[in-house]
Amino acid sequence: MRLLFVLSIFLFSGLANVSASSLTTSGYRIEVTLQHYQGDSLFLGYYFGKAQYLKDTALLEKGKFVFQGEGKLEPGVYLLVIPPDNKFIHVIVSDDEQKFSASVDLDNIVSSAKFKGSDENEIYYSYLHELEKRRPIADSLKKQMKLDSLHSEDYHIKLNKIDADVMKVQDEVRAKHPASITSMLIWANREIEIPKYENLTEDDRKQKQYEYYKAHFFDHFDLTDPRAMRSGVIQQKVDYYLQKLTYQVPDSQIVEIDYLLKKMLTNKEAFQYYLVYFLNDVVKSKRMGMDAAYVHLVDTYYAKGLADWIDKEQLDKLLAQADVLRPILIGKIAPDLTLYKESGEAVNLHAIKANYTVLFFWDPECGHCKKAIPFIIDFYNEYKSKGVEVVAVCTKTGSDVSSCWSAIKERGMDIWVNTCDQYMQSHYKTIYDVKVTPQIYVLDKNKKILVKKIAGEDLKPVMDEIFKDEESKQKNQ
Image (cartoon, rainbow, N blue to C red; front, side, top):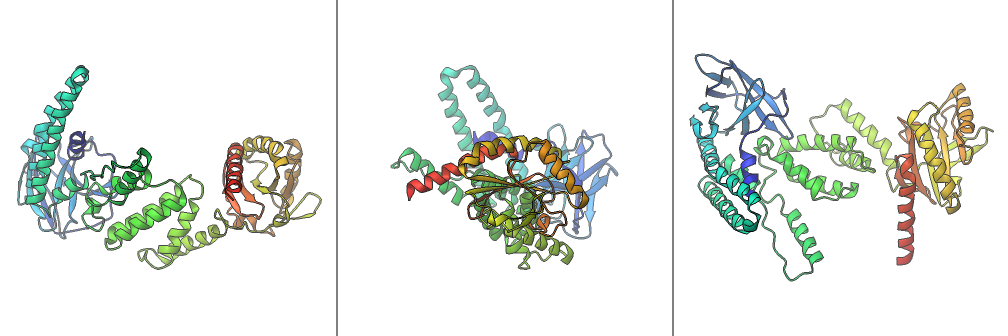
């Protein structure tokens, strides 16, 4: 039910991650009196994107905790963090209400909260009080419904009436205080009304509803609003959009990340935070092909000077890594290599005649390589007749290359093309970004990269999908 969701959004829970922040603001004074609290310290925290940070600390003095600084606080939702378990109380800080007092009884937070000098907090807690009045009624109805399933429809009707009543309260708050942070929070959590599309087939209806919901997902939350970063809402919106409403493939992710960043361009804090967040996210991603998103972000934003906060040294590192990854993205023609067999015979990668080439970088001392090799041997024995060749590149150099040839014989790898580059003349470690082993690339007959950096045990299912796609293309020609 929406009511329970709304209640959970606005009531209180434990603070998951309070850490120090280097951000500084000034011009505020928040005086706090807490009943039924025996501690002598209190922290002022705030939301910022995904996390919560500490802004200030106050010690008990004459029965009060006072937070103050010379400059203004950025507007948004702040937290009075109560040690030692880091439970918290929300307070609202607006741009024009930086000096106010709060009195709260910890045994009854919402009903007892009183504020002087802050209309924003009066609005917020008045709204919370309306929600809290309805919560026990809703909880009771839900319990009764579980015990009396025969009359569940009657309970649903009653719960829907409470839900409608909550929405009426929300609409009244928004009508009376449209510019308030409380109104922003209410609207951000209001579900989008989706057309029913009744005249369509079931599949078409679901598709149209999905498309509508996605297109209007941010209608109720303005990413350009400077208060958004400290709302406690923005991260769940961004994550849901990218994780639930966007296909989990690189091309789709790139399009939607661009869509979000474009919306944030005039909100410098949000743009900076999420450009860095998205870049870090794609770096950590285990989804194949997400290096394309890394290259795109660097080329589109960093290389064009839109990340003006980054220093030259860091920028150069990002640009250099993008330059390494760009030639080996999925869909690119794999860079040619000249490698050498044990006999000294040169092997040119692009000269390998095969419908598909598996390029396998490995090291004799690598534990993961040892685990992968049996899978690759089984794969090769099954798929060799289908035009698949394996080119294995042992990463040992200098006098250590002898361990390559002995390991090849010991492990039964002498069934495919085995190579090394004793003096690193090909620079394959740089060209193919071989920082760790094993690494596996699958190339088509034109040496276009189809798949990269997969596990040995995944070769068979991946290759089966490649063959299925090829068969489907041939049927549709």
